[in-house]
Length: 247
Image 1 (cartoon, rainbow, N blue to C red):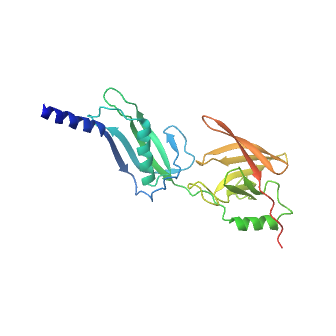
Image 2: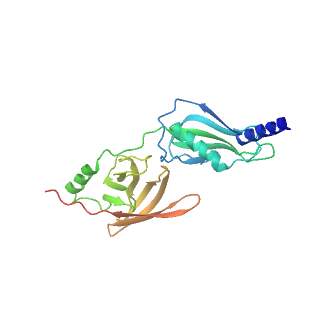
Image 3: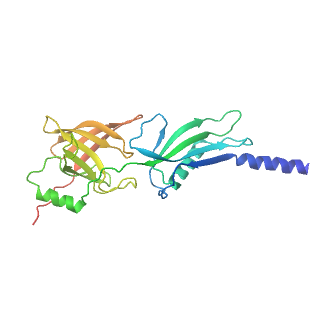
């Protein structure tokens, strides 16, 4: 009886530790990402907003002795912890298998990726940009200036025709998300036939682009809709006070 009890206890302990993790590297991992670094998750059929390169492949499974099911939340926690440890920017879920008779756990495979391009950056500090606004205040387009969407982040919009079909670029003056940096392009604008209307390319927090049109109200406010797979959100930007003239 005592031997049977010990055997049963050993099976119970094995059953509680049935999750397996297998990581296959494709290249050297980068520096670990901080815990608050946002890593977007996509499925294999979704288009990635930026070019990426494969760091490695991660597989979460279970052993034949697993008797108690795990949750998808627990599996995703393991995947995201590994992604941060390997310095990933993106996770793509390549396979998801639900619990079944022969397997009590979710079995998930994922590719860990990092961005392979350099994001367009405006190399102006906030002080330099304010100087530009002060120097050119008589000839500024109404859309040029410092804008806020109500968050802690401010963007600067400046005249820029270095890309075909673009008249202005909006760039981050400061960035609260660690995946973004000051100077990163946030929006691109082009004039239309209406003097108060602009065509807009807006880059969401995961760098996915949204194309739309905005109307500038009283040279102080503009808003537009950002539509995703599950919701539509209105974004409103308000111009921060006009810089004072240079002495």
